[in-house]
Length: 396
Ligand SMILES: Cc1cc2nc3c(=O)[nH]c(=O)nc-3n(C[C@H](O)[C@H](O)[C@H](O)COP(=O)(O)O)c2cc1C
Image (cartoon, rainbow, N blue to C red; front, side, top):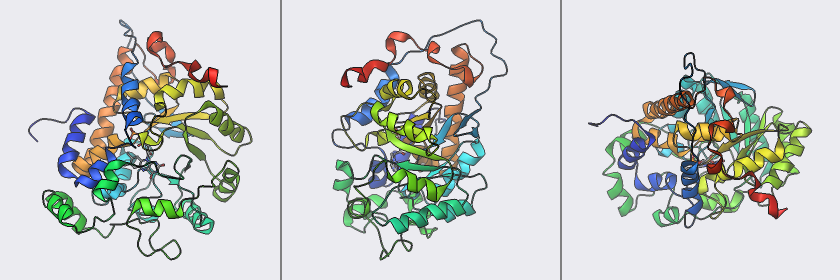
């Protein structure tokens, strides 16, 4: 590369060149018209920051906590399926980069590298994301495996019991590993670095599932596995047995409505859950849903301090992080931002992504006149540009 990488967009463009099309498209897409996927980013851009001057900017601190775990900045890596297809051994590389940056890494149920693979290659506790399947025995064992790997938190995803169709994945015939069709082979021939990496690893399909779930020797297609195995009956009542089996910190992911946030807060009142993630799954599930950042104020207002509020969706910069924190999120998760880094340059790319976000966050906080992330609140935002906490008021 002749130009230095200065922003997440640079990483995206590089990933687009280096990652086989079906996996690049899998990351860079939303469901149906992708309107919620786009709104996640554009709604951040609408929010304006207040520039403050002539304040002491020395000794700044971004250190915070997420579910009581110390973090170097309030950012975690989101769980993403098939991460080991963006780059060989992708989950291990991303977890290492996160560990070095002092932020949590979350391993997806649908990862390529297994829980044990990531545990063997890291020392900091990572978090594990759980999808609930019909085979509860398998889910119980998955929870036990996360416990044995000393995962620091369990992230229970609530918004994907059926799959929101993503056109590109269907058209590309997404599988892991890719099927040797003519179109795939032609595309793979243009990605020699990726192919070399894949030839050098044994991890090429769903590591948490193949060989662990009953009768599953081969799961190549995410969509058929989801359709057959994910339990459409998952309910609020299931949270209790999951907590009992797990015993540790529990985070509910995929809350987008204040009424659901209230239900999560009730579970938090009785010590069953610790945090919720305001999320629309990165615009990959209910297309037409509100953007995540637009939902944050109403949810933060609805739950107060009964439950920790985290968010994800559309975070592409440190400015986005500070806006989410100002609106009431204790921390954010990044999905695509780190996947682009990973696809572009492996572990170094994830490190670059986190460096970029940390620098942007730090500089932005200073230019807003603050030195400690703990002091960031809605006062750094121009009020007329903030999403409205009353957005849901008339629905009640
Ligand atoms: C390629 C990809 C795969 C994902 N896989 C999962 C998953 O396995 N489990 C899950 O809970 N969320 C999954 N998500 C959603 C992310 O955890 C997160 O909610 C979303 O990426 C946040 O939006 P952002 O990508 O704009 O940062 C995935 C997202 C992407 C982009």
